[in-house]
Amino acid sequence: MLSPLRAATPAAWVAEAVRRWPELLADHANCEKKAASTALALMFAYPEDRALATRLSKLAREELRHFEQVDKLMQERGVDYLRRKPGRYAAGLRAAMRTHEPFRKLDLLLCGALIEARSCERFRLLGELSAGQGLPTPVADLYVGLQASEARHFELYLKLAESHARREPAAVREQPWQQRLEELAAVEADLVTSPDPEFHFHSGLPS
Amino acid sequence: MLSPLRAATPAAWVAEAVRRWPELLADHANCEKKAASTALALMFAYPEDRALATRLSKLAREELRHFEQVDKLMQERGVDYLRRKPGRYAAGLRAAMRTHEPFRKLDLLLCGALIEARSCERFRLLGELSAGQGLPTPVADLYVGLQASEARHFELYLKLAESHARREPAAVREQPWQQRLEELAAVEADLVTSPDPEFHFHSGLPS
Image (cartoon, rainbow over all chains, first blue to last red; front, side):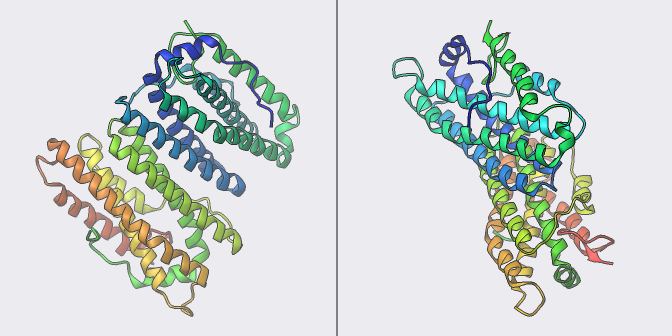
């Protein structure tokens, strides 16, 4: 399945991530926890969607396993946890989402796909850095390992969005779901390429 | 480790559960989801407690796996999902909990232990029913299988409570944690033995 992303992560973000890898890890650990809780929130919001529940339960388990992997590496490298407010990325996407059904569910699933696709792209960029480019080997190895499952995650969210659109024609009466994905992908692309005062796993251009 | 429970489940609840096993399964599926989300909520509330995060992440994964097992059995037996307000059990325990730290964390962990211990006891009672006592064999088998992990869960919550008490002497200055456990266990025992107008996995005496 093709990535739904409409902009590449700026090289400057990768350079910043290498320089600030302990913060990267700590923020990434929070993202994995958050990804699990987002999946659970969808399971609670749509209990009648049994296929969604089964698949997102498995996804949440995988995110929690990643959390444990990142946390273990943090402990091995002496990296402390980080309690920080969510960055502008999540807030920016949330602001673009519609709040009434059946559009709300579609937007939640499409944004889920975009977030997972961005994580996947950044894992790939971090994993591709060759030795000597600054990221400690175990950290680069972690990102190589995580990439494949994160790709499956954005595919899953897209499939759930597609199946929601099929079963709820009202959700796509005015606009096909692919077109709505393009709109949200444009918002997402702007968030990761425009100057961002903070550094996060999903932050924009370091400013 | 000894069970912290102070009252046995009334035989009338077991009889009701056998009679209403489809509802039992549906409510149980919700309990597994809720148990995972409670564990995650603790991970978000206390990110500085790294041991808690690692252990509760594993516990949440196990609860989600149980959710998937129960959901699979429901689908095999044609049992529909159930969207229902939380019963009086959770509300009753929440009302007994203190809301300021470091007591809040202690009470959350002790109540976590009590809820897991009660689930474990009810799994055992349901698993012990011999064939012909009304529970379909695959349902009884499920409960036999779940019992062991649920026992590990209440032990884990008790260990986390003990370790919190050790590191936060203020939490136990006025009262040892074991004594607080007794108080909460008395509330819990009352909730499962007093007449309850509704039937839930954690409901009281059928009335």
